[in-house]
Length: 475
Image 1 (cartoon, rainbow, N blue to C red):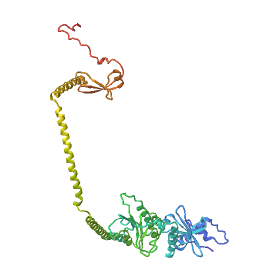
Image 2 (image 1 turned 60 degrees about the vertical axis):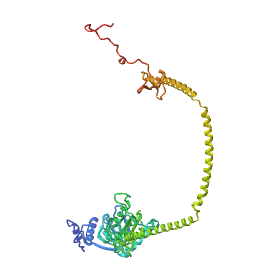
Image 3 (image 1 turned 180 degrees about the vertical axis):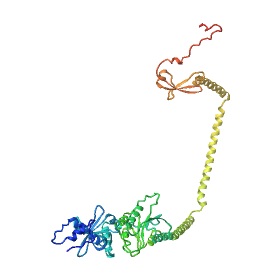
Image 4 (image 1 turned 90 degrees about the vertical axis):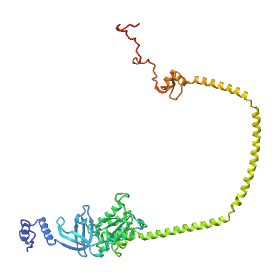
């Protein structure tokens, strides 16, 4: 009997004709293996151009090329699947063995191994139960690495951050709620890093935003946040799955800036909550955790200021009371001064008696010395001493070397200021100072004894020729 393959004919109809004519026991030409494989491939692809299959992943692996290979199985059957690099890179979760998934794609054959396989375009976790299983497995694996340990987290958030970084969607209600709450409580500088919060590429954008804030240098053109809030509104587990991705969890755990996770509503829990330093039940609650109420701060400061002033006043009053009590026990001023005044009077009397006695002795000595003085003897001695002093003055003037300088002499000194008296000493000194009457002139001694150059000698003076006698005579 013939097997119809209406859509398997090649361009020239050879494969279709050969298959249609092939009957058991006749002499029809045999098909090649490639021809039969090609016919089967076309039949399978045309008959299953788009399928949606549910099954459990088995043998999941990602090749070095980026392609993803696995098998879908249930209790009775198994089918291979492949997901090319472009589609595999957009997966919203990390596929692992044992996860129940729904795969959408087309069925094809692989002639090289006589196998058929499913080429998958999209892959999603099948149901909330499967997602929770994946959630628990990923939580256990990352927790075993210590990413959720309390020791890795900050004990407390900064009390009054100057700059807050927010990682969220720029168009949702979340960012408006956060900004509104911050403005009500304590206006703060906020930097928003816009990201997708669900769908393809959301996890990578959130992780890059957290790392971007952490990588800002202090004092740079963009302020480095003192606190980071990772926020998203509520939704299903599928909607929040980007915040369960390993890349997001590791970015938050490695962030050196204190981080608040505010993903979903109060009942929603993601792995980002475990990795962050603090979990907030809602984005609004995260804003409340981030800053105190400014009015309460002012009231608290006023209270503390009043307590400080009151304590200072009480201390001052108590000190005044103690000083007054001590002053009562002090003796009167007159009682303290009376002995000293008496001592002063006694000392004055003794001083007066001593001074009067000393003055009498000095007066007697002066009278005795004055009587011994004779004016004529003093006058003769005065004339003699004055004549001797005038003679010494004339001698000093005649011996003063500066007087010789005014008559054309010069005083020669070496570099140390010593007087040079010989030619040998002058040549050895090298540098000399010639002192004239009106100043000094530095000179350098060459050290060689040679006559001065001929150009420096003055030519002999020739008397002028007498008028009318030509050149004149020598004598």
